Length: 142
Length: 100
Image (tube, rainbow over all chains, first blue to last red; front, top):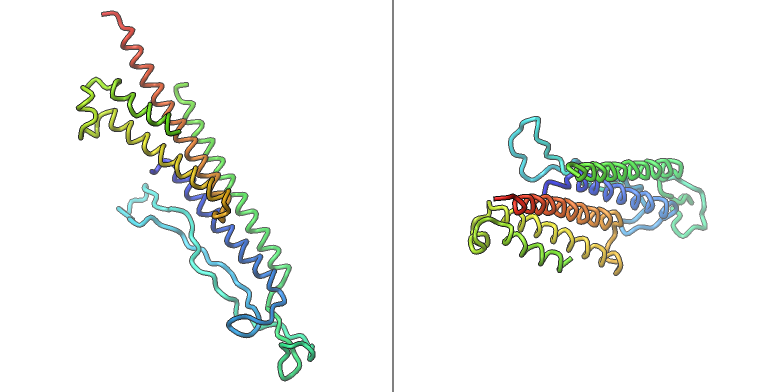
């Protein structure tokens, strides 16, 4: 049904922003995690979004709109070097006495979190606007 | 919802100018066929919304906004259909009141 396309588009964006918030929450939760399954400290993760296009592209005319919203393309690990803290008593300290902590900056995570929240808000506004548009259509002939 | 759909599904047969048998047949371009399609779509949306609400209550759902969007969709689809049906009923009544 094409009637509620704008709902679906905004809905996909809401799902994506929710996932982004989940990833940021994971980053904050693992701010001082020194052990992971892959070995070494936790690495900061970021999400990459991709435009979600309809399966059938159809004709390439500029009038038709084939977007279906956004999807999460991948979640990738940040490869910046870990922070080194001298603490020889730590069980995960290296030979040199330094512990490798994740490369997470709390200020950056906080700003990312606010960005995710604001994007979510913007998309709920889009949903509400679509709803009032449909309700306006219902007023025709009333 | 089930009751509404059932009664509404049987109603267009009476509204249709064609005989009931023809309206139920393969002629999907008739008004009754179109309305039946629209109603089954509304019914599908209602069922999806019901399922999403159930999933939310049983904790199977990870996205709250999906429930709200689905219920919104179902509500709007029902309102649209009701509007169309009442318009058609009004036209039918206008014609039946016509002096011959």
